Amino acid sequence: MEMVLDVYKRPFDPRNPVVCMDESPKQLIAETRIPVPCSPGKPARYDYEYKRCGMCNIFIACEPLSGKRVVKITERKTKRDWACFLEEIALQQENADKITLVMDNLNTHIPGSLYEMFPPWHKSKKAREFFQKNKYWLQILLFPPATPDRNPTEYCWKTTREDLTSIKSFKNVKVLKEELDEFWGKHTFTHKMSHYLAS
Image (cartoon, rainbow, N blue to C red; front, side):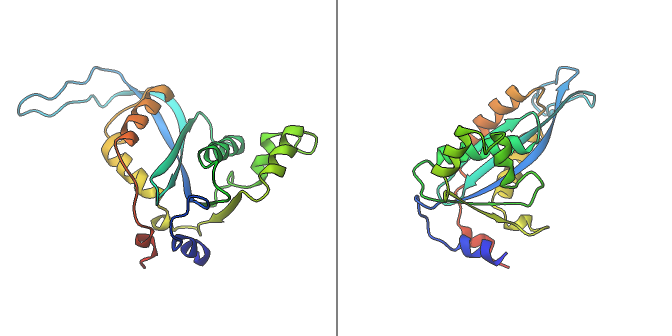
């Protein structure tokens, strides 16, 4: 944890960004009856019945000091999905010399996931070129268990759940992505890292 807190003390440096990452499952549901919109003196009304439409996984990576973020919704939660999301982070930070990625210790969040992205890695020219070019591009730091209050992405989830996902239903990944893109396009999550240094 001390290493994570030391990273949080760094000043903003676009060449060496600190990116915090997290993921969360989301149930997809559809309304079985048309909701009744609000009217003067009456709130909007929704029926309790709904139709289950499966699950999806939401990845989010945010750079708290700049406000940059990457969001990706996948139908599954696999090592390959995580590795592909790392590639999107790298593309957003393509001018960086080194990215420090801070995340929780999930079983899919391991460097070995990158090998599954290019199987078999030792025979793949694409894989060898990727690892040779990006040999020093990533430093991974893990949060200790049960420390969500030290993860800036939890603030993004909290705001999103309170203002969007807890009051709306999404029947498929496309609808969810459109709503999240619109929501996060209107919200800025830039904040001081000193907040996470307080005991």
